[in-house]
Image 1 (cartoon, rainbow, N blue to C red):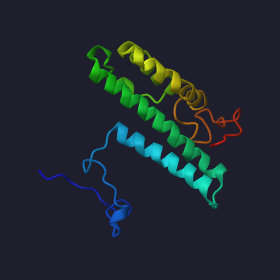
Image 2 (cartoon, one colour; image 1 turned 90 degrees about the vertical axis):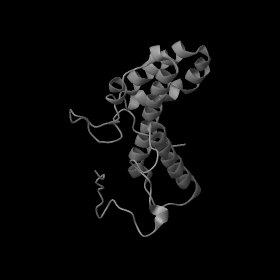
Image 3 (tube, rainbow, N blue to C red; image 1 turned 180 degrees about the horizontal axis):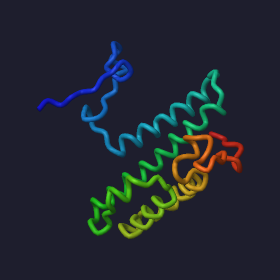
Image 4 (cartoon, rainbow, N blue to C red; image 1 turned 45 degrees about the vertical axis):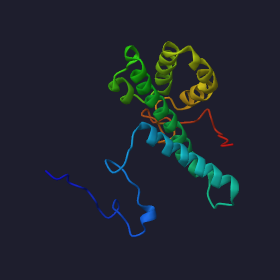
Length: 167
């Protein structure tokens, strides 16, 4: 049976092949590929903002920018949880526990515990990244703060954090 492809006017291959990206089963995408994409997105935007006079309002693009950075961290953690399970079977964690949560604090705690149990040499890495991951987890624990202006209780996000400096 031939695989059905889905193209429409918005999602299709275009005339300019330089703008065609390989996705799905047309290439190799995994958590690391997705994470790299979010990381490169953040780097491109910050570089563009710092090297030119773009006619953009930082106040308008801060949410997708920081959401991309946060999502990159989440994907990084999830990817490394899987890799640890491949290195040491007794440290394997189910995909359900990894994929079904977006709680950075919870995911980081699991990764930190698994890294320490896997190899003590990971302690330098833990020390190096722990603060920034915990900072993101404090401001946006579940990945909704930078996606929506209000939470499920209709309270505005970031009321106690009125300024974010992208530098």
